[in-house]
Length: 290
Ligand code: AMP
Image 1 (cartoon, rainbow, N blue to C red):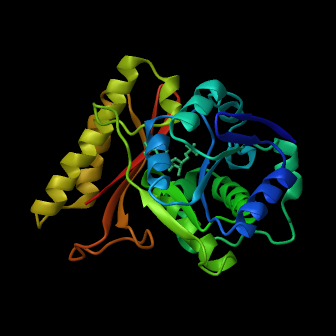
Image 2 (cartoon, rainbow, N blue to C red):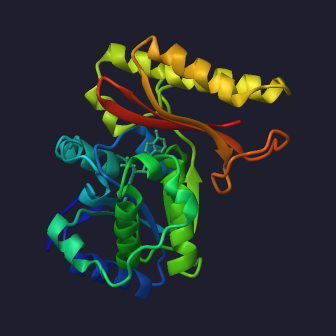
């Protein structure tokens, strides 16, 4: 059902209406850009919106809190929701269409006979610690791409492992016909990567969480300039430093940004540091190029 048009933002809640809208744009010769989100929009999302406005495409933003990607039911149930503020942000950014399907309809529309086959590098990092997470992301993103048929889609580098999985989906399921644009991570003034989960923390917890980014920068400096660095030793020291301020590191890895493989000491290209950590029960991720 089409529930309303506010300013120029078309708000669509049914898969059929979204299909019809996208097909009619195609018939008019217009191309579509897609920005998939789970809502509770912040400046990180807004950066993706502004990137999408650099073409003449029509921009569709999807808002769907994907139950399949949560391995913790409480995390899913407590996922922040701010629909009125989200709509205002989309209007301010002159977005053409918001697609917010019901959970039942999207889940029913998925063809379960084509179960996802993830590449081996999806078993590391978050794939190792969040069982079923990426299969859930895979199913929903593939479905959104099928319904919306964008020529371009925008994703944040903050979720880097997700980003490389999306490239894989586009290659395997869409013959590389969708262009994926990676967008830089937007940070708070203190360096903390913006995230909808930041709303679950107090100001002082956010300041403590920002120490992880500072630790990443310190590690980057050593890795780049000290040819004799010992990464295992550096990691132990960093985990120790951060545990003293109440941060529990889940993983802290130096890997290839191409395929998340372990890098050799003399590989100086395409290196990235990846981290997942907990502070007061909130799980956050971040990464930086080295
Ligand atoms: P989410 O709503 O958290 O699923 O995120 C939707 C999209 O926004 C994903 O492509 C994220 O990678 C991207 N995103 C989330 N946080 C940031 C950020 N701080 N900077 C840039 N992109 C982000």
